[in-house]
Image (tube, rainbow over all chains, first blue to last red; front, side, top):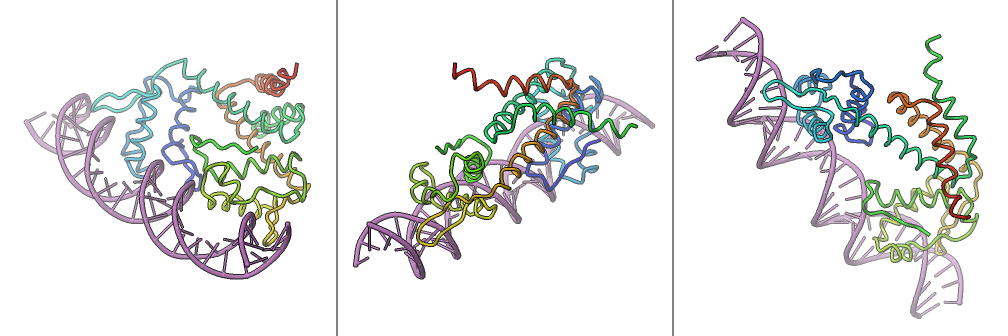
Length: 126
Length: 126
DNA sequence: TAAGTGTACTATGAGTCTTAGTACACTTAG
DNA sequence: CTAAGTGTACTAAGACTCATAGTACACTTA
């Protein structure tokens, strides 16, 4: 369920955070369902428990999960987080469009590509 | 002409590289025009000459500039670089669209936002 | 000749990421 | 109650990157 890329420049703990953020916001992980334990996930991913702990601490700080002492971490149900996460995508889109504009990429090229990319994954279902 | 953000997580030398890449590919810096000297640019940006040198080495390695011993670095005219740089924008767009799709952002939301963002800078001209 | 240019090299400090190991309080199943 | 599993906190160390500092040398040009 969780995949990390050791080649990626992004720190491992950050990859884990973003991965869970998406899983939670998209509804794959339901509210109040239990997160993998720190030690178990560390074993599964073959990384240090401290790295998982760092990721979970960040997720808790941002409101994605909540801890229960002695029992574990659980998914927090918060509809506002979805909007927040979606907004961050649009912020990235704004920067990307500005960059493309500097490179003289025409507006319709963005529209066309975005549409194509969006439909890409669905062809495999056929 | 060159602005760097010390708060940014991206290394300074990398910011400089990307900045010049855009300036060169977009034609603001014309082929065979002289780049700022390593020492002069370091003074202007209040950073270490070694950092500029690192950026210039990367730009040379990627074919954006060429050095002339004792004279300086000059902009390299290469039309292929523009395509390469534009392609990198589309690669980023693909990743962003995939991320948005996971977050249940509808396809037309991307199209609408992209169009709006593209036109944003132009209103100031009125 | 002197000033300006690129280039190369070593050294160092700061910061981040990750791992390693330990410890303690809590909850739950037995 | 006990043992296992849970989160959490802490220190320590190694590896790596980034940026700075300082020096040196060959080249070109006014």
